[in-house]
Length: 451
Image 1 (cartoon, rainbow, N blue to C red):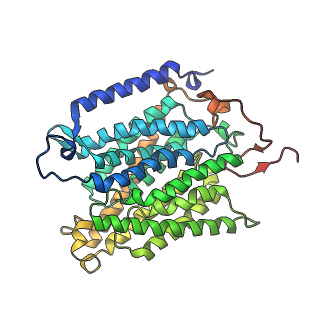
Image 2: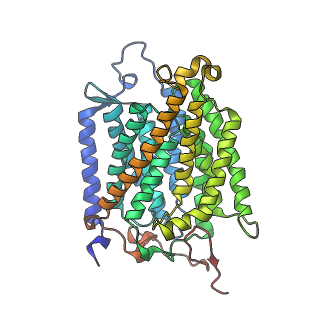
Image 3: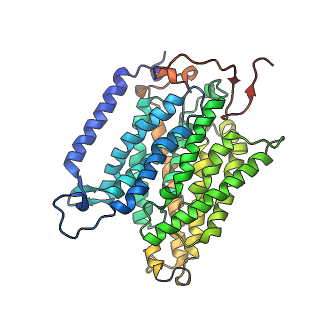
């Protein structure tokens, strides 16, 4: 077996995981402390956002660990890895993300002050890696995933600093900096890792119960997405708007995805791939404009457009990416996160261009802190620059990361062991459910072996 396909992770994975945790402990000992409100030595009268933000933190936490994890359990032989590696990536990523974001955003007197906001942002940083994980699901080793997490979160933090602190672009729900970034980073990694032997792989498919488990992830993500988009809104009224706008965008997206899914099938049947994924595109697309004065109809319109684009992407674009560009996107993150993320970025450009004191009143400078120095059109230009920069950084960073994790030293599963838990997990005897699936999409082309 070639060195690049070494599957024994006993020493390689264990030593790397322990080494990374030791490095993090040392870094936290040197640079991390409590924020003032969490310190028992705090001055009298110190205020805290804990009570206001903790409910949002809980919701985001559930999305990261339950929503993303179960959404990826559609593969019939990869459920342990989908949920298990999701937990591994998220638990490591939130620690590393707090450090990387802290060094760039929150370094005071040589210390990173950790509080509820930085914990939410730490969860956000892991979301980018989990999106990328969806693009390469079933094709990488846990060692490769740990290295990917280190590199991607570092690049993500740098891009987030560029977009938010240098360009001062608005992206409160992170359509650009999390969703578009994670998707196109993942597509670039997937292109570098492309293997022709994985085309129409016999294990890349779903069974009835695996699609039901994936639907659990969909429901959790759908319910809590308003919290994701509103969690770090800078004002209370902005947070309120973010919940309302996202709520209606998600609702419109569901009806649209259902309608398109039925319309695209010759017999008018619904495709579970579309229902699991495209129904969430409205939450992604609503992110950048979440706290803007777009009114409920604006949220509905964004969700409507996102539902159409996402469903069409799953139907037509995913096969083209695989056959023409050699980009194998296991979960279809381009359709759920990539294109809806771009839609969100474009909506942000329009929202910034339309901002005015007539629309926002005294709240204009609170929603757009740079508006006293910029015109509406100038702010729109910086929004466009933020979107463009994110796409460039994601694609270039993903390609470089893909080359690094493709090095033989990290090991990766051979073609015949991809999309299969047994290579890295102790797995109980498989049940014979009498159903054979062979698919490049979750639930498609189900074959009855008796026919």
